[in-house]
Length: 164
Image 1 (cartoon, helix red, strand yellow):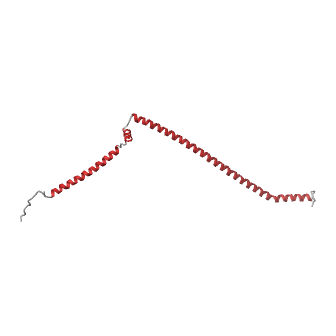
Image 2 (tube, helix red, strand yellow):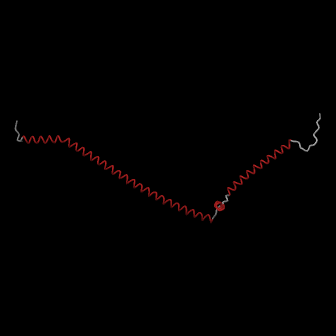
Image 3 (cartoon, rainbow, N blue to C red):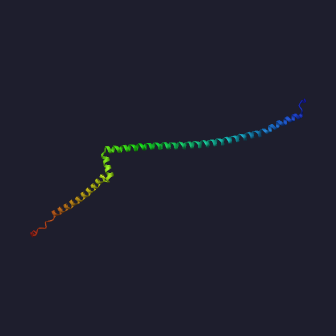
């Protein structure tokens, strides 16, 4: 065999370095995997915090929109109420200038407490009661007439002689 020009000490040194590199590869790979896992965990936490902040911002924005909608709705209702009030006032003016039967009756009811419908109901009830009393009286008179037809008059003093 041919002796090489390289010193044996150098050969051993290179062999030891190669062995060390091969032996440390698994440790380096494990460290790299651990670093990747930590980075992924930190990224997930960062994303979760960002999502939570976004949800809070959306909730605040929605609450502000709902409040703005409620205020706008209240303004619309106030406008409608004012329009209704204006129409009612206008209608009162028209009622005074051009009274209708309904308005006259309602004004009379409000001012005097005299309710024509209530009076008609009472009159109808009284009339029905009087009809019932008249019917009862007619019934009594009919009973007297029937009794008078089937009984002999009390004025007969001489009984009819019997022919026995």
